[in-house]
Length: 447
Image (cartoon, rainbow, N blue to C red; front, side, top):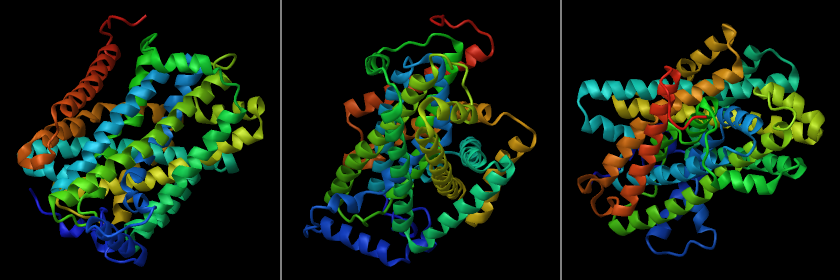
């Protein structure tokens, strides 16, 4: 078993800032007290909360808005089962990622670096960087679209403001992991509250929604593209890499019992955080289905959805939609930057300043806007790119977490391994079907 990396012992991907910050030090001390058997109070679960909440923002990013709006508007409640399937798969793989970091003290990218030859390592890094750029494309466009709809400013100006606000939040990292986790948690709560408002004002057909949740069906090739986009927007490559980095060394586990307790608390947090994220995604589809499917099924863009939503459901619905989009774009951009930094450092050993990292990964988003690509279509396609990159971290997690040489007594049991293999197979299968449909190969079962 590998000893925890001292550089990341604070539980985050920013070693030079993690040593500072009274709040973070107090949290680490309180976690250590619990691990040592001293009482932690009724709120001790909150001491361990943070990594899964941070990773969960990846499941509520602007790419989710784009794919979920299209799913609800075009197919009503019919693709809700895809959201449920994606969320259950995400729970399993985020739990595996967190366990890998807790048990080994190394993150997923570091394991990939150590276990592969240089050509394979560079190929995996390249795929992961493409996924990071696709992630940034969705996040920056989401924040910019929200600002543009709110103020009327040009999309390019909205992207610049989103970049500045994102970087300002990232500076919280200098105070350690806890302030940044709290800031992201507050934005997660804001998104959830906004969609609670949406469901209160939307005329939801709850019976049809329940049927769509448990009835697997893909009506046509366009629905397949949206379904794969939902999976790419829900189970995200950078979140799988990031979660292992957020947990590696957190609490400085010294014994097997320490690690076992940390894994137990981590699994609880994963279930709670991703359950909330899944409910938000379902609420997005349900809202779009209730508001647009009958009479406005052509709604496919975020801006069009906002302009149509306000006269249909009232100003409260429109305002909640914009606030949630802004919170989503800004918070997910922060998380995407952290993940990109961790991936680069894990695969290559390089660590570059966050500002440089921020500039590099957001460049494609500015290029897309500058050449006039439809923003919402770019969001949906970015999620498909993410889904195509997703097998890399998924397969890596399945391989590493089953090896007793890596995980010791924490290696996956038969049921966990079977579920992980099934989840990876479903994603790989959908990707192959999507590629076949894209190249005009007949796909049995598509109506």
